[in-house]
Length: 416
Image (cartoon, rainbow, N blue to C red; front, side, top):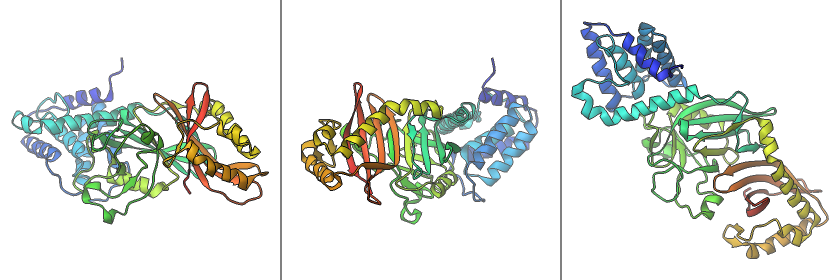
């Protein structure tokens, strides 16, 4: 049975042990202190993913019993990123291994163990999550099952896998979604499935980036920027969930990364990783899926899974094009709500729309739909509604829920 990289790393570190190096002992103790003290600011401007890639290289060299090379790389890493606490801990272990066997990541001297214990637990968790994401890579060409269809307007998409503490960034190309980068992230202190204000949980669902906050308007705590998402979304509100202010944001200047579960509910990235995301994505059109565990599927199977819903959506489109009000209303759920209006209260607005486009077929431009499945099955659909003979129309978003074998609309509203 093949041993995990983490086990190999520890075994390799143990193999580095020699005797009688007082300088190494002194450096190791200093590095371990740095790993759980308030660190200094980095000397260099970091690049997205670079620090983690270099740390993984250190792990791999150690796993190959190339101790000296691993130590040299680790020393260079902490010089460039002195606020990278996990790297400091690994560097300390590699130094200590020159004088004694290392039993576990963060094998600190007994005199430091009590004070360092809470931070050591967090750093070990972070290390395991980074290595888990390295071992459990998405299958080539696969996409998260939530991304059934994205329009050309959705130039990028984001998916968060909490089980791997990972954010995956996709580019929507003419050939389909392509994974272009992935980053370590932290989530809420109390885990997932946010229900109420202040519960310290990260929400699960399909969201969209709503704005890009100016870093100058933020406290240092939020790092180099913030991208709010639309929590609570329509489904959240329907379920009575409360709270607000869920962002993708960075870390304080003195902290490279945070433990896997360390936030008040936000998704937190290292500042260089967040900077890359901010430079890449667009507000309003970038979907953000947050899942306990992503299910990776082939694009073909995603398209096959969407066919029954596409048939329902096409039937709704035809009903609206026909101008038959009774037939159109049959697609709406009794618990429909549009910004506080019940179906009965909203029906006059729908009738007015039909009157305006009577005799003209409805086209759905820039259509996208994303699926969220938990206790219920939900489709989040966005499109531009354009009547034949006109050049433009409102951008709408619908939420459809599956009721038995039928799909019904429980929200519809204009978003642009």
